[in-house]
Length: 157
Image (cartoon, rainbow, N blue to C red; front, side, top):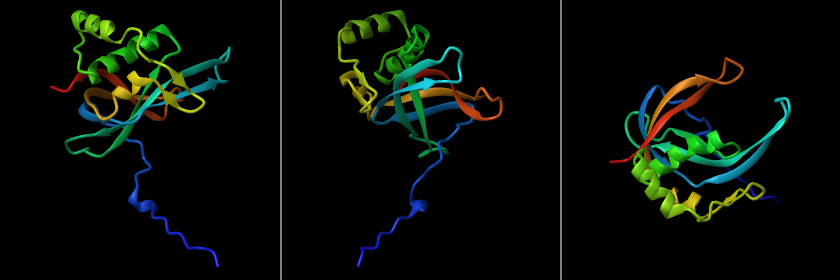
C-alpha cells in the first residue's frame, strides 16, 4: 500500500504582487543567480543577474510577495542595481556614501553561478535586511501585462 500525501495549496501564496504606486518597506530574502537567453531580440542576447525575493514588511500590504532583479549584463543595469545594493546595505545615495561602499566592497566576492543559482558573499549579505522602495506600475513590452516599476530605493531609517 502506498503512503497517502496531503497538500494544501490554500496555505501558500502563488501570486507575485504588483504594488500600487507608493513607498514600501520591504524585507529582502535569499538571493539566487540566473542567466537566460532572450531569443526574441535581434540579435539574441543573454541576460544575467541576481534575483531577490521581497516581502512587504508593514502596512496594509504586509506579507505581499514580490521580487527585485539585479541585472548585471550591461553597465547601465549594474549602475541601477547598485542603487538597490547601496540602500539595502545602509548607504545613502550620495557621492560620499558611494565612495565608502566602493572602498568596503571592492575586491569582495561578487561571484554568480547561474547553473546552481549560487551567489558570492556580498550578494548574501543582503538576506534578512530591509529597504524602502518607491514603486509605480508600468507595462511589459506587450503593452498589456502590468509589472512593477522600481523608481528608487533608500535605507531604512
